Length: 530
Image (cartoon, rainbow, N blue to C red; front, side):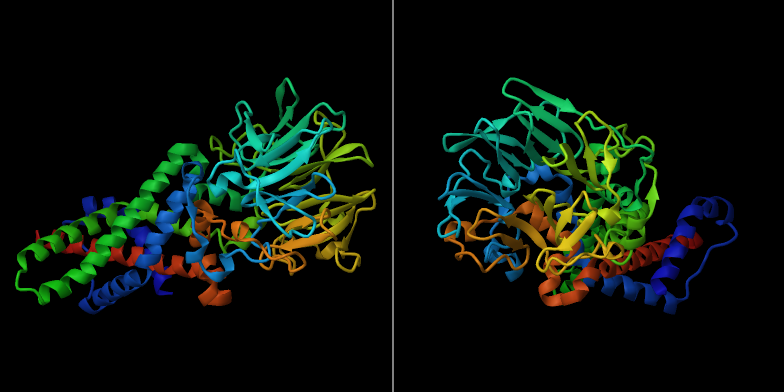
């Protein structure tokens, strides 16, 4: 309640401060009782000290997240991370899928690149020659073999083809989107590369970019959550917007560091015979701490509050609310499928394409026709993080896996079945927002028996991981993401880690609000004295 009152007061004060100073200053100024002022100071001091380290982590990790390409070559050794991030039993998405080379060898791929192994993973050999050393840049989305026998590999950033035992990059002209998937074409003319926004048809002598048509009777509205996400990162206005948010992060870093100095220096002065220099440092920090915090209050509160809206519990209503893209923003585009495409397969049974998107599954006869969205009650639940398994098991039967579980899907019947016991899934209970018991990160039908890879637990049905695979690092960008959303604290916070961002945000807002109120009162006091 104190935080809410402080926020309301601060917004009012900030909006009318100029009018108060010009019109009311000679006659009136708001006074604060000493006891009340001490309460605000106590809140600002101790709450600020409590969250200062976390604020530094939020800001540094946020800057890294805002510039993924720039930090994609940097890795973190997993030995210094909590146990849940260590690789064991092929967990943490290290195996997404497999491609058979012959009866004795398969290529396994996932979040840490490509591995040459066999059907029981008795030995796994590094097969990443030609791929970048940065783990983020060798996150493999799919590997396929086209009709000519050429093997293709799609990572999040680039397309490669295998020559000998080395991957050679293939340039996709004018592509600025992350790659989602690849698939061979039914007419043997090449392959299809699916990015998050467009499609490329790659043949031996030509690369052609395609933009999917919008479906009939569909508006171009997006979730309010996505708008807030892009506002929080600054991506709503592209690189200039991201740089502005970086500057706000630097401001918060300065406020945190100067706040820590203001807390420590008085103790140093009391116990030191030389007080002049520490006193000057204290005065200098106090001046700039107040000035920077005062004049950036609206921007800092905006960044903190929008960050809170991206995690439970505030995120839920924003995910469910649809809105039109902000005119002139990066989300305002003529491409209906901008940042919505996730995976693509050719359906031999129905002779059409099936594409997994953030709008659901769609079907289309060819890539120039109008897509038809399959109703959600006739398709399996897929996590907002995207589909991880999209595999044709038998004629008319597909295996679909994501963090929302794994299912057998019969598109022609519009029915879904649980993978393990083959019971039909109630259409009214298909929910894609929560995590399922099976947090599926991969699947292989090329092993000695079909294997489902759980993101957290992996699988115990294969040989233990070799040292080369087990010692793979984590990308710096992914580590920053885990820090930023608070998942890395789950080992000691438990279930409450899901609320870490929200609770931290409340405390940070109270620190910002109380600091502003104190600064206003200091200014008013100076005005009265003058």
